[in-house]
Image (cartoon, rainbow, N blue to C red; front, side):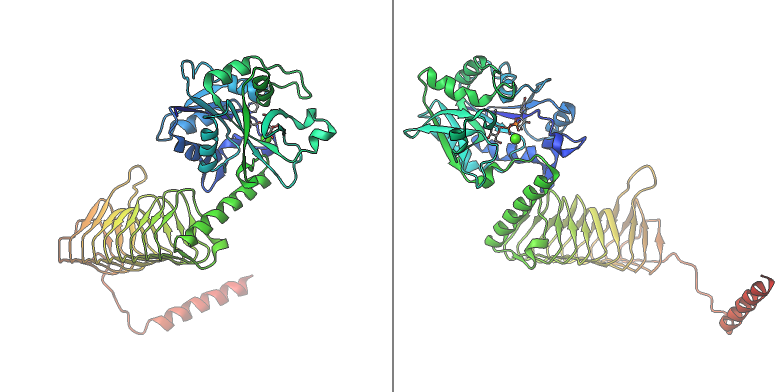
Length: 450
Ligand code: UD1
Ligand code: CA
């Protein structure tokens, strides 16, 4: 069925106390809005309309960075969920498929649930997502009769009997687009909040002889975020899910509760993730790799058999081939490290390529930045970079070459050459203790003068 998504994201989120619009607060490293989009895109929508309002520009700017098209429509005043949906009318003019309304602050709806709703919409005019929370609190209540949905009553407007209903409104609504906008046109705001309620479309539809039903999902899927505490809780829920999925897929997490995942972390089976590892967005790790404790990875790829850490940092563009070793206190950024290369201690390798089997000694730095521009360092295969080498980019070290410990390499090094650029050593015999005695005498004089 042709589908359009209408995602409500105009609300202020006052309880977040934030300059960042609520829907842009991150879960697993990306805005909660992206979770809603990622899941709902399984329906292959023809249109994605996002209703923005509070800090609309920031939301629009973010949406423009996504690799697929969205339409944004502003709701300048937030007069209620029906009023929000009404803003999409023009954007969906002429569209006669199914319209699915979602909330930008309800990120955990499953694709399965959305598919069930779309299916239910083939034989029901209005489909509402219901759930049965442990504590129904202030959710809207679904009034059912003989298995069909009669109306939704908001908590504020509900009678005692209605408040006793356990089946609540999760907020998602699926209706054919023309019917949705025709029903919304008829909704008023004569209620306890003085708002235009999207939920009122159910009673309107029923009064006009249309059918309505509820699809029921688990409470976790409808978790909404209104406060920082709920944001942390939601992220915790997301992390738990990611950890369980990782372990179920054959990945060893030595201390699962200490591993932080991004929404898109991909790990192959038999990889081992030691305690306290953080994955930012864009990480893929192949089978059998090992990420040792306290490492931070983002935007990088780690191949089969490679080891990273402990205490390593892989930044965007770090590409490690098979059996590469990255050791403690090593930072790699925008660099391709070929098979079997080793960078084991205290180094910075940025804007570089490192050839197969090359060994980078402790304390090596690629000096990639001249204060204005970034430059590339090329280290070919089988090179031995002596400890504490400064590679001043742009520079190339040819295959099989060696740089002497402590060298500052400013010129290209030909293949198989030994490059050394340090001051020759000078041993002044019998001078060390004399030197210290001189210093001690100086200190004693200074103390006496005080
Ligand atoms: C809504 C439902 C309630 C349901 C609950 C589930 C209505 C009238 N009530 O209540 O039955 O149990 O969700 O969480 O729909 N928004 C806009 N523009 C507006 C108003 C809201 O974009 O003018 C957005 C909000 O940013 C939010 C979503 O719509 O993402 C829901 O609005 P909210 O005010 O949170 O509705 P609830 O009172 O929670
Ligand atoms: Ca809400």
